[in-house]
Image (cartoon, rainbow, N blue to C red):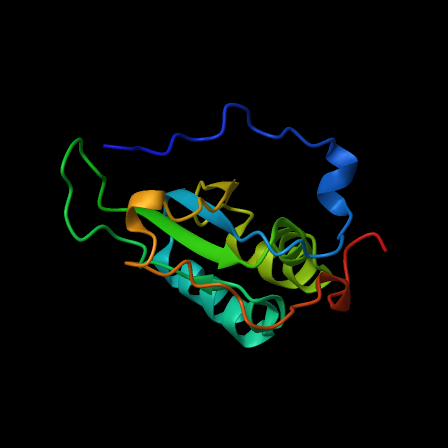
Length: 156
C-alpha cells in the first residue's frame, strides 16, 4: 500500500515575511487554533466579531470543524479545550487575516487582558489528495481569487 509522507522540512520564514502580504499562490493552508478556553462568553463575542468583520469571506477563510471533538480515541481532552481549523486559499491570505488592522486592533483584544483562552495558532500546508484516493475524493480547490492585499494591515 502506498502512503504519502509529510514534507521532510518545515519552511521557516523570516519574521519580516510573516507581516508582508504577498500574492496568493493558490496552495491552500490550514490555520489551527488550539488550547484551553477560560471565558466562553468572551470567546463567543470574539467569534461573532470575526464573523461580523467579513474578513474570512474577503480572504476565502472558513472553519472546517467544530471546536470540540466528536469522540476521543486516545488521551484525555479537558472540557475547556478547543481546536478550530480555518482553511485559507494560501499562506498570504492567512497572514493577511492575522495581520489585518481590524483583527489586530479590534477583534483580537476581545480575548486578551485577561486572557479568555490560552491558544497556540499555527499554519500548515494542506496535503494533496494521495494517489490511492485520486478520483474518489475532491481536493476542494478555490474557484475564485481572494486578494490578500485588499485587507488593510497593521503597521502599513
